Image (cartoon, rainbow, N blue to C red):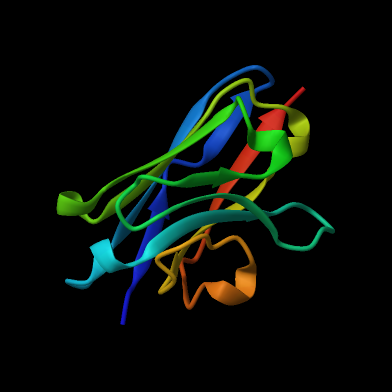
Length: 124
């Protein structure tokens, strides 16, 4: 079992930055790929970024490339999402998720554990 708790969301102006964090419980954190998803108002949940168990491979949704950076610190059981140049369309609840896949994990169904989410609101 892995429990995930996100933090770092908030209200930011367009063009601003935020750093989301997710801390995981359990001793097997380093064996999971980790991801961030988001769900905007009236939208379906969508993939944002993911990182392999050892941090060697990172994947991004197209709109996140060049603006968002996913990272992890296995000894601290944490994964982060650094978001820059934020836009109003980035407004969403952001979810941290854990996947048992050690290779590429991007689809929601590949992630077994989910956090409760943290709200990010970008004002124009």
